[in-house]
Length: 103
Length: 103
Length: 103
Length: 103
Image 1: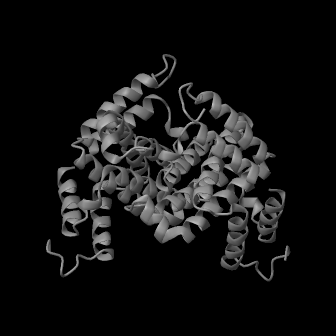
Image 2 (image 1 turned 120 degrees about the horizontal axis):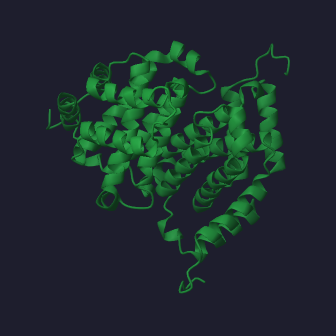
């Protein structure tokens, strides 16, 4: 993801935006973008939302990732490692059941 | 990110969870994880939150990415491309000012 | 609050909107309005947000209450009672400290 | 709602919490409670959520209202008036259709 982070950092440095980018406001902004993503599904079924709003879903999902990558970069978090570590924690929390045919 | 997506897909297939993973509930879940991330900053300054909750911030940020990557995979969205495309749209929406010394 | 609930119900019945108003989508909509409220505080201090956006804060807060009252009415929840009961639960969860001068 | 506001203010004054209650953190907290409300509907149908989680839905909805009433009180907003005004604005934004049989 390094090339993406570089692209994102260039974007915010060209606009001198890093001065506003404390982690609290980045977390708040990520939450707002997650809501804009969710808004695509308001009052409609999942299928209808995807059929009608796929392009906007893609854009809002990208905004979520952009804020997430900004935050990770500021806090020196390696997202690849963070995701892999969290999947291991989730696997302990939600063990695969022994009688699960997929196991 | 392909290896991450494979790791995530293995996680949900081992638990037979894909049956629950319609896009509407994934968007809803991503929004809930974004709130759990934001909760680290409730009532405190950005600095204090980062100093005290960095590990939890990392975990919640990872959960946001995990749901985001699930959703992208289900909708055949290439996140690398989606992020790069969205940065270009944002650049048009927020042009670098001519008198901006960083320009 | 009964007169408000009547006003709200008249509003949605005139538009035939009750068919869309399942509780899941009302909860989702309330959450989206809470984000629009929060958006007034994005990138700025609390004081600046209140000074500049008080009218919009009032409107978004009203939308949160409108969805909340719709939901309560559909589920036969008396909000006055619900709030009073929850304050009692919160009081047990967060007891007033003995050495608290306000006690 | 005046008696509710008095009850809420007594609750926070007994705990000396008003010092933390700037509007930005109240809006953030209201948004977190809205997510806890929404969490009751994660992965399940609206009907199933209501059947299984009605008590928790009531509690989380109450928390949303409590934060909303705190915020309104701090900003000298009369919620009864704010809601009534907003319904009038929404009525202009979403006019009742002429051919609407309910009209």
